[in-house]
Length: 248
Image (tube, rainbow, N blue to C red):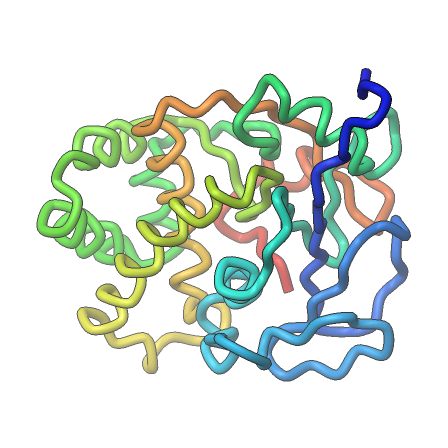
């Protein structure tokens, strides 16, 4: 319970969108990505310090980059235009999120499991050599993360969607680690020959790296169900084939 006179921390919950959509919650900040014109968007990822032009291959990460570089709230969250963290059959409120984050570092999606390892699943669904390149980049840039990377590659479950709610300082640290890896990966692969789905390489890879960061830093997470505007639980869809579920 908040004490009398205690200031409520500032929080912005961003909803990433590339087209008009039905809002599920009125306390979100809509951020349009990749040059999309959305009538009720409060923010565009193409203003100020941004990588909006990379949206085709970075997906919602162009919004994440914008939040990292331009948002000054104490707590931040990232959801999608059709995917929200769900609590008591409603999108989570700021008050509920802040209460959880008094005891946890991150709010994330439920962990989803596959029979193959994450490495095997990625190799089947995407281009497996991407993860080999990531391994070498991590070995060179952040060798202390390598054991956690290998553990995630050999695991069978992960938090997906690049969705979270956390303290901004934690997001800053994560992004300072993540984006140098992704920018280096750009120099090592040819993304131009891939179709529009497979070209979303950096969004796919970041989902796996998110789990590496959580494991290495021993973060305390609160996992939650993710529901979408189609009024159904994502777990029923994602369980069939995680590699084919995407955000746009």
